Amino acid sequence: MIKMEQNSCQTLWSNCLKVIKDNVSENSFKTWFEPIIPVKLEKNILTIQVPSTFFYEYLEEKYIDILKKTLRRELGNDAMLEYNIVMDNDSEENKPYTVKYPGRSASVAKNKPVNMPLSEEQPVMNPFVLPGIKKLNIDPRLNPNYSFSNFIEGECNRLARSAGSAVADHPGGTAFNPLMIFGDSGLGKTHLVHAIGLATKEKFPEKNVLYVNAHIFQTQFAEATRNNNRNNFLYYYQMIDMLIIDDVHEFCGKEKTQDIFFHIFNHLHQSGKQLILTSDKAPADLQGMEQRLLSRFKWGLAADLKAPDFETRVAILRNKCYMDGIQVSDDVLEYIAANITSSIRELEGALISTLAQALNHKTISIEVAKEVVDKISRNVKKEITIDYISKVVCNYFNITPDQLSVNTRKREIVLARQVAMYFSKLLTKSSLTTIGTNIGKKDHATVLHAYKTVLNLRDTDKMFKRQLEDIERKLKAV
Image 1 (cartoon, rainbow, N blue to C red):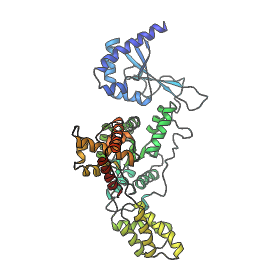
Image 2 (image 1 turned 90 degrees about the horizontal axis):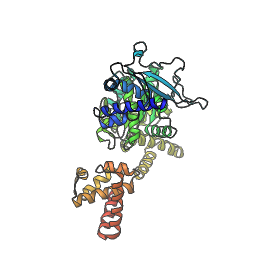
Image 3 (image 1 turned 180 degrees about the horizontal axis):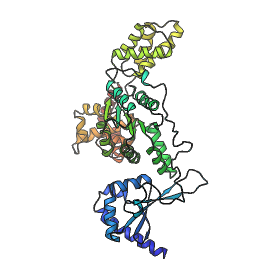
Image 4 (image 1 turned 120 degrees about the vertical axis):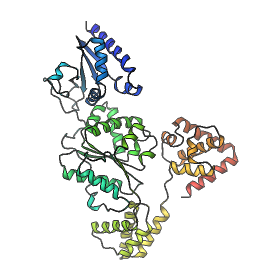
């Protein structure tokens, strides 16, 4: 009898899926309908099992109409739908348990709110997630030293700082959601987002604020996947009021990470929660990021941080000295500010090195500062990136960088693309997928083939080998 009921249930749901598949996109069908498991059919009530509460809420919000139509087609106008959600407990003593939710078409929904479980016998236990973290006491992971009070404002960062201050005053309540702060390394992105989080926590101590680096996020997600704990991972991030993701560009080329972050982003944004992101590039320049995420990054404000001007650099050094209780003459500070222009991190590093050298000389003089600055200038080399390699290779072969992405069999373009891929693999730490995404939007197999082709040509063609050596000298002369 049970087997017949199950077969009937599966047949009914298969018939529904045939209709649904013709009315939604292929991606939507795979994401939202293929994971559903039909559980039982009792009279006119179909019970289905879904992976998470968020999954249930999304179906009810986006696809309730087509679910109603297909069920009524199979079961008549009195058709009703119920959801089962299997929750995982972190405690080893407790087994997974099921929470039952009514669909919007169920008769019981008239008497109970949509998000309330039907069964009063089983209380809804806290599904969130990571051991040792309480629902109302999340460690925001914010550095108290990175506050607005010691973030020096200048023309280079005024827009980003003003937007950040507005967000801290009204998290989730401004047009700056998400707030994306981008710029080169060492310009203060991390400092600024910590300052926003600290100010928010000070004004709204009840809010759950969380700062997390993109690498940590990926590590947590990988561990949750390995431990079959993805639902808990999702729940944990869905309960954050202000989520700060640092270095979001690291998600490029990571499809599964982007997919889970897409769902977290959607849930938080639709719930009026605040998202803050940092990146080394503007949204439009993020290669390997899904279009649906890129479009969402552009919903709010993207504010860039530029290299600070001379006055701002001097102000940063003065503030550093004040915070550390050290007296340094303006001549020394101005000399350092005039000669270290690339990043705030290097600027403060030069000041610290000057103070350290001064311990030997007993005085903080321009001569000591000059010695430190000269040493930094000799040791600091420009980072070799995929973009830089592409530009140098294109210039060598007398083509434009745009031509690397053109789908053509012209020998000079194909060769230039292969050489760019070869040097990107040789001189950077980027994965084959990242290289392919940035050079011609190719897959990792194409990059590997290009690398082997160039190696073979290098070993068999003396003229080509000299060309490679010439290009490599240009690349390393930075």
